[in-house]
Image 1: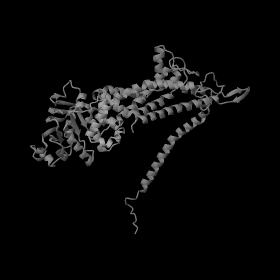
Image 2: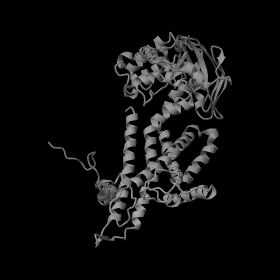
Image 3: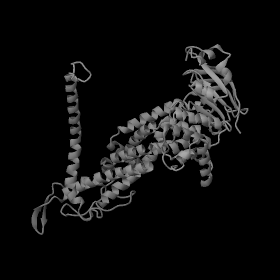
Length: 310
Length: 259
């Protein structure tokens, strides 16, 4: 004898709930699609347009020395080196400062230290909102106007420091708070001093998260163009010196080639032709920048995975 | 050489709030003492006061004295880090360091203190501690695997091995078996019996049968009343506490009339 399911048994889901479930699922998938579309579109556009130039022979070894919009070829080596150097100097300055600030806020900023900790958090919040051009103007006013220096790559790094520190402080803070207090207690109970507990137990436990935060910070500053406009001149030649002279950079190269986008009429062997060399190089530089940041991201994750005992 | 612990007129505060009032007790060396009492009566607080872990909490402080072999550990010149090297602690939930292997976990106390130990000395200490904690046979082939990959009972024994590797004089155990199954609990109780020949042990437990099995002396804590601070009601030989206690409240607790 088969048992019929009565209308109010446990096995039935009301049609109202079913409809709500379907509506919510659709909405969520739709939102996912809407969020994903620009990302995929962007990556596709940059890759499709930039691959031509970036896979040319010599892209990563040659600079733009002597190349005008009338010439094809040249490479992005000068720009890549410039960006890498500027971002590396910025990272070397920001990360120690930011990690130490985060350690102070999480490990020491309790009870009697509350006022200073609160003030620090407030300052970091303000820094989070500073536009890059304002930070650049500040560095210009301090180092070029007041101290009478020259525009150079290291000033760009300083401006980027102001943009990177708040990002790394926030993420490091969150990662440190995620370390369970039981671990700290276990360490104190062994007679390990507080500073050593932080350095040898807390930081290694939070390490992969902190590294992710640093990479996020790098991704934020690597493409900033305002500091490049104000604090250093763009040079199509190789310049490895951060402290003097104009320097190439990937965003700078993008801007430089962008200015020549309209100049597509050239003479080849005396015959007029329409070329898109500037456009190709511009997209190539954009692709290079994205690939650079992605590569850093992957390296950082590899490091984090290796150092974790999982 | 295990040490003796005395508490004199101990009042424990969280900021302005008096959590435990006027504790006076003596713990003999090389013995096991159990702290029992209902939840929230201050047993863990008193335990944490003995190795100065209480002050790790922001705003927590203590009035009175705790003497270790006659020396006041709350004297102004005393460094809490030194106190904690002599008085070890095992916590309710096992907390091995997740980024370290089993070997490194046991050696952590020694490595993180000042002074370098040679590799073979370290090997010796690690093996000795794991043997004392009854864990050596189970892990000797995987000392470099992560400490977090063990079962709950094994992790707790690992934490005990870690605590005794630094050779403390006194071992404090805050409900070490409450997160474990009965078999692991039995293993740890046997462990306590063997450890007491070398260390002074104080164990906080919710489980009265465990206190009766494991300890020679028992201290019963309770709140003086609703909203009142906790206090030490009675401390005596375990036999006496569980058969013929002198305080009415102790008898009520033991016989299950409350708590």
